[in-house]
Length: 358
Image (cartoon, rainbow, N blue to C red; front, side, top):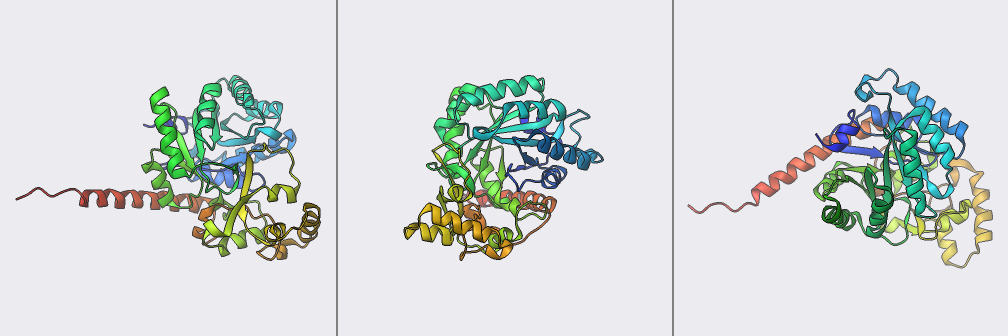
């Protein structure tokens, strides 16, 4: 049995997690993913009351679901994700002590030493029961995360990912094997890695496993789940988008428009390109762009689209998102298609073996 299956016994193969997307990752979404055999995540809040309420709601949803019971333990079978630059360790410690989530996912420290402090305090708070995942986007970050915090899992985010990530990073296809090779040379490959970035279906998950990952994380695909806490206009744009390598782009404009201040300088965000990006390129000032953004924000779902400025985070695989479905159905479909893709690949490899000469 794999290490991930030992730690998270309710999960099914291949291992799949939903990303802790702030605002989008609702209690219903997180619970549905875990009930379907994945591991669902909530985004950790700096507001302890709001976070406690979300965790209580997840616990209530899962209370009658035997399949997610971690071998009778008191572990809550979901994870919490924290953007460390804007998070409060005291809030995280309190949530972990009270609810004992299976995982805390750490991301985007303003100072890398936060990884060490948070990991130490959260392990103490949970008596080592809550596992620590750390998201990185470069080989160097992976090295430092291992040195500072000895994570239980590394989440390797490639440049295709939607939302926030490193301004400069490799694709998942090269990042995953390079980090795995490093871990094997220095740590005996004892740390599982999960691939993230541009993965939308079972074919992507199967590809990640072929690269050596223990499983995968999906964000954009779960934005098109019925339980996702995002605007309907955002979801409609996800379904309309095609050719994500062209229709999305990386920029700090989304944060400037939303006036979210504090992200470390080496981060930006990938979103669908629209009028806001176009006007910025034409010389429109941030002040004017922000003012127009706020006007459009008040218009609701009608303001979304290429003609507007609404921030529509999405990965380059967005063209593969065709339908809004319940999260549990997405998980089941991914599991089935990943197994099929793996079987097809195995058959192709068998067909390529040289035949013995008669």
